Length: 198
Image 1 (tube, rainbow, N blue to C red):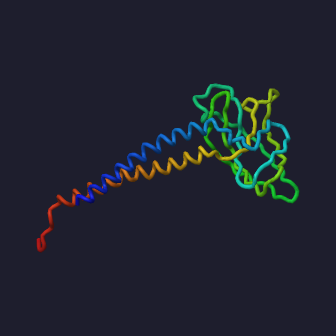
Image 2: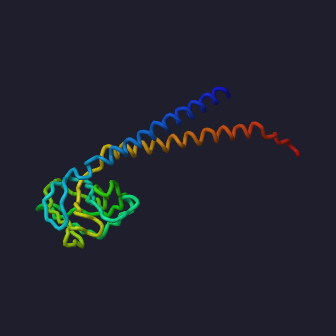
Image 3: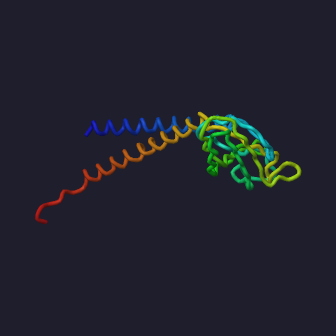
């Protein structure tokens, strides 16, 4: 019985340490990711332009990068208008598939960005890209001022953030389950024994 209590205390203690460490790690990783340039690692193109972008094989994150006009509480409330993207592959290569991705907005009024597509690129190469939308005479689209389309990858900080979130979940399970098991054992230990033939 004493050994069980020691083990339970050890699990709770380790879970508490992991919880605090992973929470701090997640906050730090998110802060680093906010300032990372991985989202435009393969280049940016302005709206209405035709450009050649070198893309690697695999998944490429496609984000809109812009300043915005108007009064919004935070970047998640900035409405992103309808945008268009056409990607022409090099000879002998299939056209990349575009999957919509409703990512969270980040940054502020002068540096807003939001992931809107994932390009499934079949092969490494030079791709001809055109980015468009309902462009006004001043080059803006809706609240987006001088929008650029950025091609990039998930940052190492973002991968670390997901890892820390997983550790957070494991530590919460440890903190929740062990006391519950102890409570059940105490209840069973104090419950009256049933008598045969009653």
